[in-house]
Length: 198
Image (tube, rainbow, N blue to C red; front, side, top):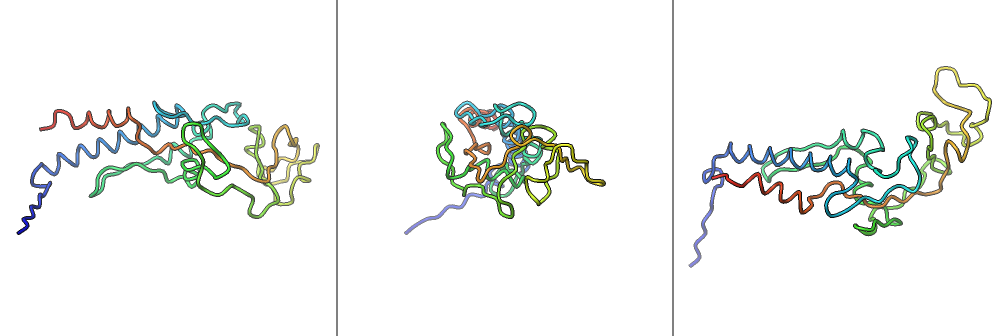
């Protein structure tokens, strides 16, 4: 004869106290994730730097120096199963998992497909702030003529220099930079939330 015991944690502990600790844990997970992006890694892994400088001249903090899109998208929450942290940025997935043609020293190979152009012949990679702010028109490299005037009503720049302001690539591989993770130090910080709770 088998005996089954069901424990209702809501009755075993104060439900509001558990929700409070889970909310603190979710906030801590979010802070740890943002720190990992800003510091380009954590106590166990370091994110691989970029091959080329970004338009702002940096390459060592690839996820942070990309702009505020990723950091601003980091969100947290609490549900019936516990606390969670995530990203709403559409490019977050490729940064987290990387593409198959790239490796990261601490993480290994990526799992997503290599990035290739969908409607164009090549990918436009800006190398300067001017190129990053420009809007590319679909007619290709010939629109970047030196001395041409700016089109009225748009911010298309026609005086960008290939190889200086931008490059075109047929494909791009992104190494995995898993910003959504819990490192050893992160786990210790989370455990401290539960210490002393009776």
